[in-house]
Length: 189
Image (cartoon, rainbow, N blue to C red):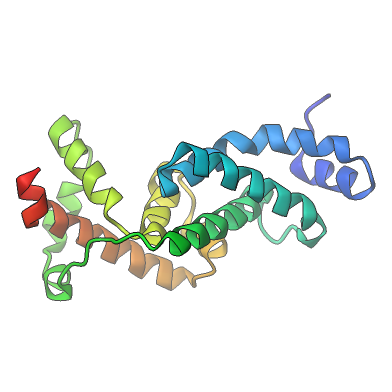
């Protein structure tokens, strides 16, 4: 089948040609699965949730109005599905003293998250990321890995653009604190 725009496939599916949904599935299933896997960190859960997402997408396809890109719309469904699942499991996440986050120096925070190929630093960063709450992980993932704009992240998460900016800023500071003030558990690892 020739490749067409997402909107074309959506219209075809809504007109009754449900085989066109396979094109959308082929186009987005890998990305959605990767996003969910990065949040839930369990391959079986990620596979099940990815299936759930595409069932939701199929059932609510008529709700897609084109106010955002189709990929943003799917990411919104995937984000909320994964976050909802994470809340059900009630994972414990590292709590950090707010005063430490507020007092983290801007320049050092920016410097720490610049280009760095230090494998030890990358390992420490991955460990710190895994200790963030799922919604914090998702915001970083959207911004840095998926290269979504602030506007797209706001649409996906349901937050305002200014709230996304503030949360990105605070999450970076939180990571800085986690990397520069190891907890007792981290020191024992």
